[in-house]
Length: 313
Length: 166
Image (cartoon, rainbow over all chains, first blue to last red; front, side, top):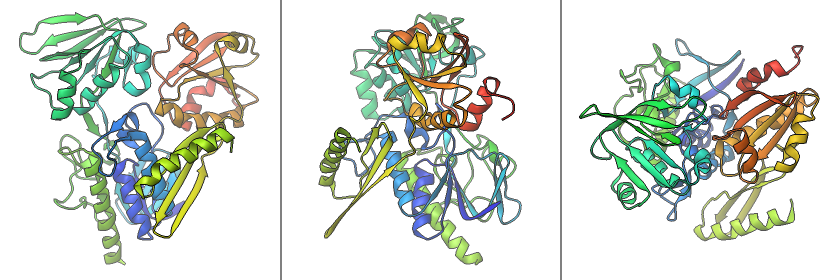
């Protein structure tokens, strides 16, 4: 069993900013950064599946999401943060030192910063697992290439959905954005880009009801939420960007959370209900959910953590 | 470092020094990914280069012309990693596959196929998402794994193709 002053669980903008601050405060943080996956639940977090990040200050020409996260990580490593590329399987915060388990290995820590983020929601359809990788995708930047010249669809209406739709027009002949409301939630600049893109068609007030195809996707069944009219779009690809859920399964019954699963922090701080356990980033933020706000809250968590450790000696 | 890669790294450094801040251009080479850390202060420039673990050790690179012979003519399971340069999750599993090749190289062959350069093979096996790992045994596809996974999970999936004495 190895002991660490501070363990940070998660390695998106929040976790890595906390690591930079904690390392510079000589707290020798260990970052348990997660495992590779093709969803946003992976080392580096949600930005690993994006392309241009245009709203992160300091990059007047934009920066690629994965590149930004490589820089965050290198900056934390430069000040001595250590990394473990594994997934936490269990936590025990009932007494100090806290226990954090990675499969059959148990680590202990004086303080823990939780920054496990959020991951993309899937549709929850039975046909989903059958067609994942056969036309149904969670990663536009990985799979857009396979749909050159084809008609495809994106489900969702937020910034991620619109960004994916625009990215996919590089390959597809037409991208249908399926959105359940009559207005987009995406930022105005992204909306304008979508409206002005001749390859993007928006299907308002519709939700995905089922997927057609046995061995590969042949169509998407959609339902109009107003009229209940059901129709089938003859598309060969579907990219899902309908929202996120926080990665808090590990903390059920351990940390206070909203019904939606988001961790509850004391307003204006990163304190959870367990003294010595702090939360930052999207795992506790369902309002802003930006790289910059995640980074800001990661900084708060490291400072809260440092002061708390000083106060308990 | 290979000459052309060094030039690319230097070009990156030159481009980025305009900003006068800590920057990290990275370049992928046959030896792995090189990450350069550049710190500029009024009186000094510090450049350090860090290399991520080599990842190509025991991995065979396949192309459209070598694919069939390598896969059907093999006397042991062949794990083919369908990947591309622009796929982030592919880059994350590459070092893991390198480790598995090092540890299990006598039992399985680990190979990779670039879908950008060899679209015919990707199409033949209906690969529409990367990374996809196809596991061939006796010339047939025995298993298909879609999406990046951690090492533990990957080894578990490959268990049936590895000796049980592990």
